[in-house]
Image (cartoon, rainbow over all chains, first blue to last red; front, side, top):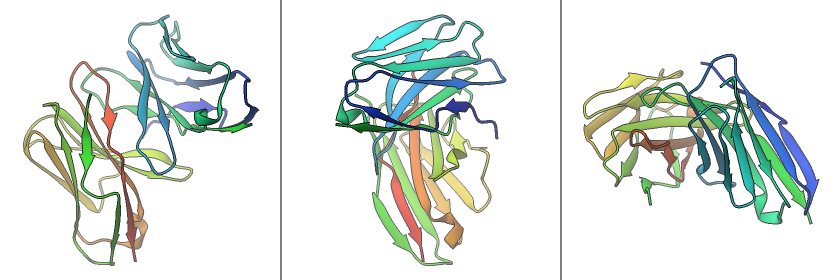
Length: 111
Length: 111
């Protein structure tokens, strides 16, 4: 099945640094989602984006729905140790179609 | 808050056994999904359902079946478990137009 191109695959950063990751697709999506997964747990929804160009924040997290509808970005400002985990992007063509996922970005934060 | 409950966090079964993984959601969601997650392969869709008694194959349905007799419950069945089905299994539910929410996952080991 289709998958999104998510980068980077992994990141090692110092506590307090800002983080950026992105997802690109060859297809157009009408919804972009960002999830975070802690070890041994299920993914938890962070941000949902429904409109091209939309910029949405959730605390220190900010995500954008690309103008072309083929990409999305997630930024984390002033990282802290509990930001450690795997971040997944997902795209959806319409409400009744399955999600297409990226392979995830594994974030490690060095205190 | 959306609550998606998977019946077991950890499960160990033997090759050839018939295995049932249960998922229940309490939000009257129409759509439910089963994924498996393996290192390096990301999340892969096994089956999904848009309504009671309705099912659709995902990307990797071979060796699996599903049952949705009631709206709140979506069961994944391994007809004859094999070692290559050792994996993390994730259930998700979605109420249109809301995004998907995941359960905590079942880590299944087939010996």
